[in-house]
Image (cartoon, rainbow, N blue to C red; front, side, top):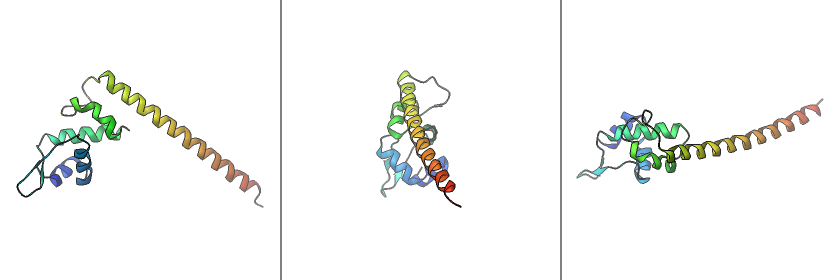
Length: 119
């Protein structure tokens, strides 16, 4: 299938597919006219990539899951390395949330102080 067909079948964009391919997560062949052509099985892999990205992982994180991207990534057992990557990503997200919460609290305090000084 061509890139537009794969994008439509997976709910993503051709740009994202090219990005996944550049990252080494999916592969295509070139047709005689130079268009990218993907195997039908690539749709499963792209859906799994999207699932992992939606869960908060990065493309670099997703590479750890390459051996299981062609099946049901949600049903199989997760390797220890996958669990470690997910825990590390969760720690990063928790740290970002904590930092943003601190910024929010400072802004809220500044607004309360400004409101207190307003007649």
